[in-house]
Image (cartoon, rainbow, N blue to C red):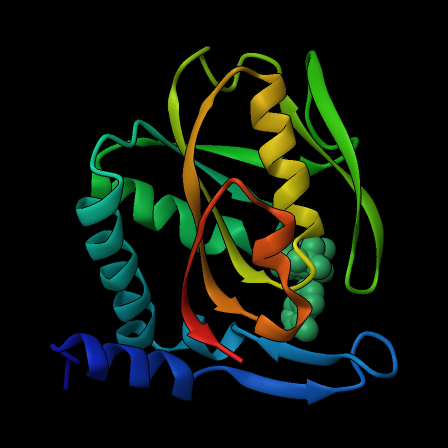
Length: 182
Ligand SMILES: O=P(O)(O)OC[C@H]1O[C@H](OP(=O)(O)OP(=O)(O)O)[C@H](O)[C@@H]1O
Ligand SMILES: Nc1ncnc2[nH]cnc12
């Protein structure tokens, strides 16, 4: 049966997040969103909850930018729901044409995010989306990328926020909305 209250939707989402100790390296408790994707009701609940937040808080949104790779799983669904476009922020070396990039560190490594130079128009109102906020390295690099591209960043949305790692501090002044907190 479809979940129809906010509480029921959050409960359904939480039930579809699995924890894997010591992945990808020892000491990391990996929060896996794959079970959400496998369950149409849980996936719909995620998009419903994001949609509700964006319509209330960022109704002026013009574009959703998603983070490689798991932000790509939720971003286009939300963008379609809101009737706006979706653009990719990829790990370096995957996008053709002229690009802009920013290096960063994350909970278990380092990388560089990149987007096409013309992906966002100057002043365009953009919302960032990813599956999870841990140290905030990934999202803060994405915020920097959008600043470099002269976008207006409205905020970030994630399914999961790992509160202890204080990622929300790192991405300030950008704000984050999360569905589930650990
Ligand atoms: O807040 P942070 O410490 O930066 O960590 C969060 C990021 O880490 C994971 O991505 P990962 O780089 O593992 O890439 P993937 O989605 O391609 O697996 C996750 O999907 C976030 O993008
Ligand atoms: N603990 C974690 N679980 C899943 N993805 C992550 N990305 C960074 N830290 C993570």
